[in-house]
Length: 297
Image 1 (cartoon, rainbow, N blue to C red):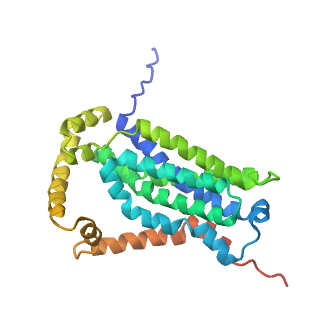
Image 2: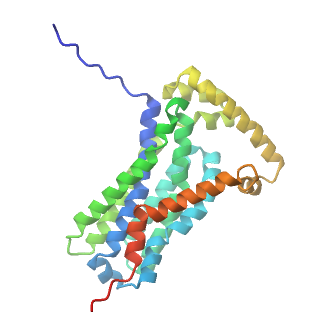
Image 3: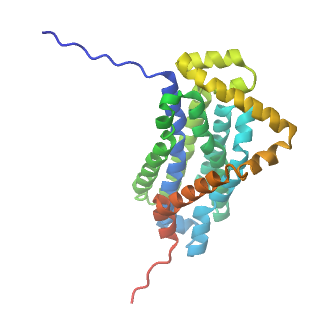
C-alpha cells in the first residue's frame, strides 16, 4: 500500500495577524529582562557611577509611571486612528526611548529614555489584546488573546540571555548593545505591524465603513456565522457611543469603571495585575536587585 502524503492547511489570515500582533509583546518582556542585568554590569557603573538602592530602584521602575499615564489615552488614540496605527505609534515611541538609553552619556539621559519607553509601552501594550479580540472569531478568541503574554515571557528570556551574552564585552557596548538590539527590533516590528496588521472590522463598522468591514472579514478568513456574532456587539457599541456623545465624553468613560455594576470587576482586575507583578518574574528582577547587599562579618 502506498503512503498517503500529509497535507497541511494554510493557517487562516486572522491567526497570522494575531501572531504578528502578539509579537509586539516581546518588546515589553525584553526590556524587563534587560534592565536588571544591565544596571548590575561593571561598565554601566563605570559610565554612570554606583547608585544606592533608592536610585537604582528609580532607574529600573521609572518606566512604569509614564506607562500607566499614557495607557489612559491609548484607547482614545486607537479609536481615532485605528488599532494598527495606535499600536505602531506606541512601538515607535518605545523604540525611540530604547535608542536614547543606548546612546545615553549621562544618567539623566538614560532615565529620560526609560520615561519615553514608558510612554510608548502604555500606548501599545493594552491595544494588542483589543485588536486580537476584534479580528478573531469567538471560537478561538480566548486562546489567541494569550499570545501577548506568551510573547512577553519569551521576551524576558531573550532579554536576559542577550544581556548575559554582552556582559563579556569590555566596553560600554556590554550594556548599550541590549538596548541597541531592543531599539532595532522595535523599529522592525513597527514597520511589519504598519504594513501587515489588518484594520479591525469592528472599528471600521463603528465608523460606518460597513463595506470595508466586510472586505476585512473576508481577507481575515472569518466565516459568515462567526462574523454575525460580532455584528450585535458592534451595534450595541454604536448605541453606547451615541449615548456617550450626549454626555461629557472622556470623564464619563473614565468614571464608568467605578460604577456600581462594574466596580467589583475593576477591583478584581487591579488586584490580579498587582499580585502578578509582585509575585512573578518582576518580583525577582526588580525587588531583589533593589535590596541592599548583605554585609560580611
